[in-house]
Each structure stands twice: as structure tokens, then as C-alpha cells.
Image 1 (cartoon, rainbow, N blue to C red):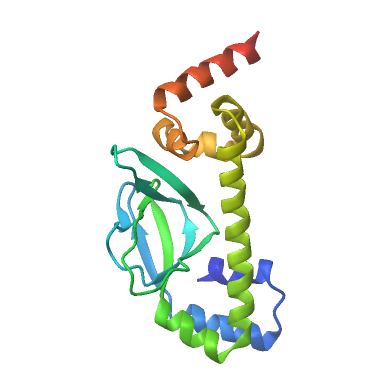
Image 2: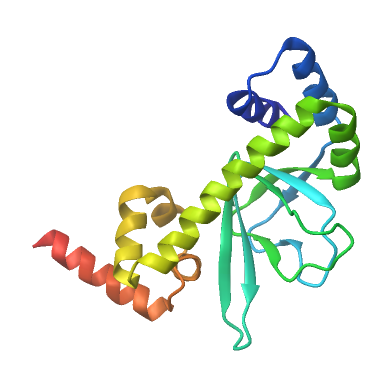
Length: 195
């Protein structure tokens, strides 16, 4: 809970009264541990959760008609995830731990209830949504603007923690390329940097 509160306080300036409200809300959260490879949500289920990642990495991904998995977004330490779709609708994505994860999960009914009673929760929700939107837009731009080699070089330069923490398979899914293409690019970049 401390990381959850600290993350909110780092993003939103809170009065003492607002901080008390956030602490009251945080007490409603349920600690969830996931082992690497375990799913938090499967496609076709109902997502009624807001999730805070205390530690680890989750991947939100879809599977295309050919069975290829593509990562929509990575949810790393300190990130929030809340789906903005209708609560009762089945989801078309899955969320899986790609490292051992420690999460704080909140029922959306609690989130909605607190948001309707306390304006600070709406302020926090807007800040979280803006942060997620910026990261999603950055990922979309990366996929749309750059060649596969440029995507890898961008991540190497701007997000080296992904190179260190993701498997080749998950990095390839995040960069929307095959493992073989990523391996060729990595060899080429490594060879170029050595020479």
C-alpha cells in the first residue's frame, strides 16, 4: 500500500485531507501475487479491476487470427491499469505476468464509489489516465513511424530496462516483429557497435 500511496503523491499534489481519503481508499485494495507466466485476466472474461503494479511487469496482449501474440502495453513497477470500457463487457485482451509480480487490485465498484464521493479521486483518475495515454501513444508512434531496426534502436537508447528485463519473445511482441527478425537486428546492432 505504501508504494501505491507514494506513487499517487508523486503525481498529484494532495492536501492532508485528500491524503487521508487516498489512504482510506488504499485500504480497500487487495494484495495479489502472480508468478511469472500466470494470468491476471484472460480474454473473454469481465475486467472489474483497477490494478497498481508494486513490483514486476505485466503485459496486456492480444492474439491475432494467426495465433501471434502482440503486446498492447507493458505495465511495469509503479504503473496503474484501469480499462475504460464498459465494466460488464468481456475483454478481448489478456493480462499476464512476465516477471513475478506484486499487485494491489481494486474493484471498479469501489473506484467508482470513491470517485463519486471525493473529487480528489477524480483528479487522481485523470492524472493516471493521462500518464497511461502518453505511454500508449508513445508505443503506437514507435510501431507506426519506425522500421523494425529503428524500433529496436529506440528502445535500446530510450528504454534500456526493457532490453534487460524482457525475454527476446516478449521484446519482439512489444516491437511487433518476429523473434528471428529481432535476433538479426540485435546481431547487426551489436556487430556495428563492436566495430
